[in-house]
Every structure is written in structure tokens, then in C-alpha cells.
Image (tube, rainbow, N blue to C red; front, side, top):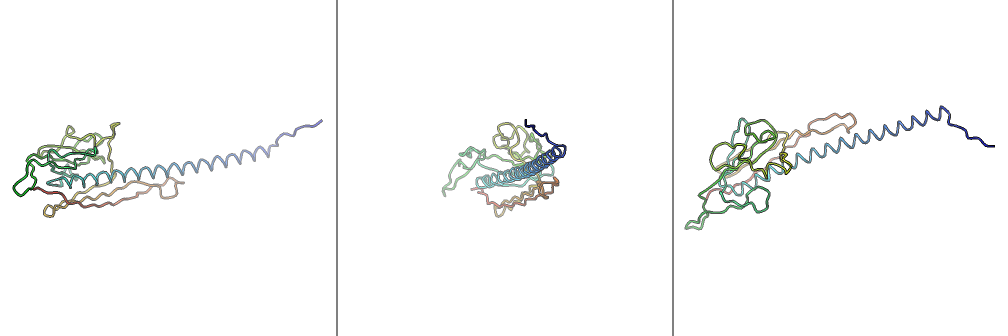
Length: 219
């Protein structure tokens, strides 16, 4: 008659130790992957916001008859004066095709009615002059500062109502009117893990992006 031998205490302890090692290794690996993924998503989101802002500035400059750098409560803002009937053909919220009101004897296009398009930083709801790293587009037909009511929502917000462009850092605009040259410098301080993700130590991962654009100018 055969009998089955049960596990000894040593074998059970060994199994518990091995299981703990496997679970511990898996937890460490998961933590590493999660942290690095979060870093990658954060950097991609920041880079996407920087690209959106600079490409919008470029498109507006190509349409604008005038570009100005404004101080809005100590923050750098950009104002592009464009023809009032400029057309947004690709549906991205940015007018890129100016429509002339008249043509003079030299066949130069002219614009009698114009609007001011602002790009400015603010809090999450777009209050002009407030502190925050979110960027908004606002449209006015006069030289007054923008209000929340002037915000162009299809550019400034996602469909869910969240701000579309967030840049954790500083954005500085520069304008050389005599050359019709506008520039933007974006310096971010997005954080990333720099120790392999094991100790969760995070340090700034800075981006320094610079672009220059010539604007259309008045005819």
C-alpha cells in the first residue's frame, strides 16, 4: 500500500520565497514600465503642444497684415491682425487664406476690415491676465484686450472641454516690424525620470524650441 509524502516545512518556505521573488520582480518591472510610459506620454504631449502653438503662429503670420508682441499682465502674448474674411479651409480653427476687399490699380490686394487674433497664456478656463500654462486663441475686431467671450473654442479646447495646448514653461514672442519678422521661443520644464525608474527620482527635461516667421504685411 503506497502513501504520499507531504511537503516539508523547508519546501514550503522555499516555495514562498521563490514566489515572493517572482512577484517582487514583476512589481518592479511593472513600476519601471509605468513610470517610463508616463514620462514618454508627458514629453509627447508637451512637444505636441509646442508644435501646435508654433505652427499656428506660422500660419497666422503668413496671413497677417501686422504682427505684434503684447504684454498681457506680465505674460508674453501675440496679436496677429488678419483680413476679417480670412478662410479656414482645413478646419483646424486657424484662418490661412486671406480674402481681399478690393484690388488697386496695380492689382494689389487690399483689406478694409480686419480682425485681431490673440494667442495668450491663462488658467484652464482662459481668463486673460491669469496665471497658468494653458494657451488660448481669441478674436477681436478692435485693439482692446481679449475676454473669455472672445475665445475661439474650436482651437483652444478639445471636444470634452479640456484645454488643448498646455506648455509647462515659458513662451516668448519677438517681433521686428521693419523686417516683418516674428519669432517664438518655447522653453519647457517637463519632468522625466533620470535614474532608470527604480527610485522614482524626477528631474527637469528641458526643451528649447525656436522658430522665426515672416508675415504677409499690408498691401
